[in-house]
View 1: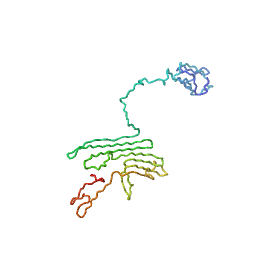
View 2: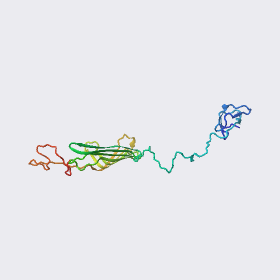
View 3: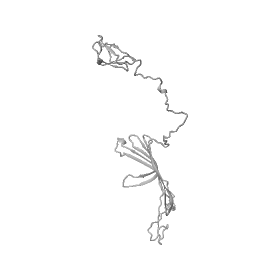
View 4: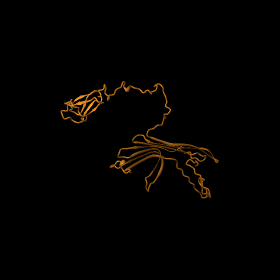
Length: 282
């Protein structure tokens, strides 16, 4: 054979090691430093070129099979796992925990408590406390925040306002990420608190119940994510009602020392009992 290239495929079967013989034209054995044999794949690799015409006489023996080829009696794709049970029998894994309220990407936390209070001058009353928080991501661009707080104060006879709310603070908030050059839009529904930015005039702080919308914009020349954190423009709008009722108690004294509503007493600086808008006692 003429060794005119670097790699030769000798046979379709694997070669038996030690049976390869390479001789030159004059019958002398070729030094093994000139070539390398891959016995498994039956491949001859020339390492150095020969000086006299690159013509050699090759002899070898082979195995009856090729070691690099896969041999199988059956196709593994048609094999079934023998651990499979009867498909017509339903079984329950006792160690598997089932979470009916499983929500991916959301974190749930909270507490609930119940208590009983009594004394020598009051009846037995039930106290309750509920605190629930839910926060996480609904998607890559939408965040969710939900909170519910319940402080159930025991109602005493002749000491309630008929306007006690079971949940003191309940709200749900969505945070939506906008385009790269705008900030984050926040929508809040429920109980929330608003106030004027720090300043000297028209300061206020209100606890409201309704809907609030807020969005922030960055500088047109720089995305919000790469800015210093201060928005270029912030827009906030709310549509809500004030929680609770406002009532005022006024005592007017006439020339005889008597009061209009009977609250004030002579030589008594207080305290006096206050009444609500519906004339109920606090």
